[in-house]
Length: 459
Image (cartoon, rainbow, N blue to C red):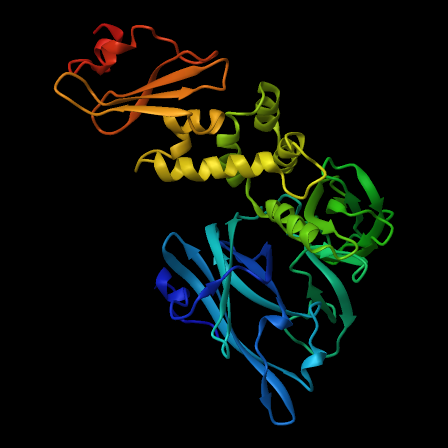
């Protein structure tokens, strides 16, 4: 059932009458060209069968589930679809941890920036699970050769009947929403669409396509030979598979390259996936985190790296600024790998510590106009951590409010002085004894009630 309401409050998409559990199902999506101003977005779900409670029914057992998927923009739901399904088994021992139920739903959405929210509810236990992902829908070119997103799958089969998984040429393509492969699914299929091929009905035009698996630096790991094909028109559908059984566990890109033989134009598409062997649960969780990085847009990657610049080197910052979106993903991954104090553990302690600091900074120092990490106090806290001692001086007739932070373990002991110059609660750094920080040994003038940003410059 597709809702006919196009503008709905965000509260409507959230099932508030039941407890909300952490995400225990996989969601992925792929974007294809639609009409002039809309993109077609396919959303893929993979839901563990054991997520649901099975109750005795007739000669067996069954579960009842409800699914809701919505596109939100700000606090408004722009489009939403919802449906339910029943799952039946003869006996409860038929259910295993490895079994997952695939599902797919398609939207036609105007170009723009959205959040996809998927909610799965067990109608028997009333437990509800939720996954969110950001998506940036762009307008496809009307003239340049372009490829759609890549849909990854681990199973493709011939079909004579049309269903939600059927593609254009009589095949069912079952999406792998987790983007994780291993011993149980050693063949990875990639599907995409090519747009704006040059085409003349009077000529026997051709294009060529190549399927490649690369590492994060775009080095070829495995590949099929170039395949030459006759152009079916101005658009073409591409699907092929690569066996990954001989590859090691790790993070890779599935890459499809199309070259128009007549014009020489070339277009690439990449999709990140993970190879995980031996079914290690903790490694699986880490793999999911890394794969999710591939879903971030360049804007989101820039926002992620912004507070990291405080602890990054000049070379890392320059490389990040000059890199494309794939390069930025690789740099962020390498950034934390290089700072992992103990690579033998599954947890990167440096990254965990930084993220905890960032969370604290956004809670304590953010203002309506400024993120916490952009404030002076936020920056110092991210770089140096919590102070050993804080001395607070409230506002008085003789002085503006100010604080002195002391770190006893840094450089033999350093301090940072912050003053609320404007009286609006924004503490600004006016002096520090730390190297490479602002030093102003006449900082006491800033606490005077008559000091201002104007007389800072002698106006």
